[in-house]
Length: 132
Image 1 (cartoon, one colour):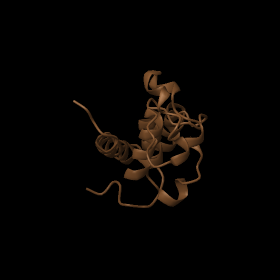
Image 2 (tube, rainbow, N blue to C red):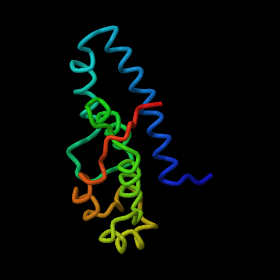
Image 3 (cartoon, rainbow, N blue to C red):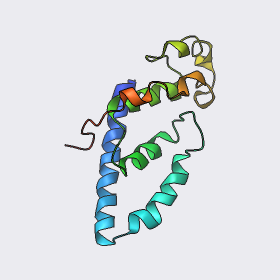
Image 4 (cartoon, helix red, strand yellow):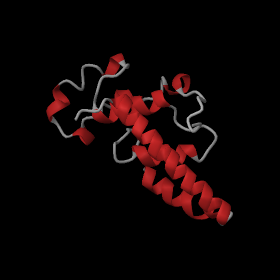
């Protein structure tokens, strides 16, 4: 079975929605739990120190972003998946780099120029990510 980055992004979005429901229930039962216990631990799991996106950190980064007002939207998740997988995606500067990296390990093949936030503000909209 082969999954496209769009299908994988939809799966990750669904998992994030279910995790967010559990977090909301826990915070309602024990007010302050989210800020005291969850956010510090989730920040470590998201590994925000690294500028490049890794598959290992993407689910935690999605859940961390869902704690604020601007959760990740579908195109942002897809772009992050393409960067982590070393696919060209829509970024023309990253197109030549992934071709020889197809035989290299996935986590080390993400191109450095693709992780620049030049197109991030334009494509990050508030598109009802968590509405069912």
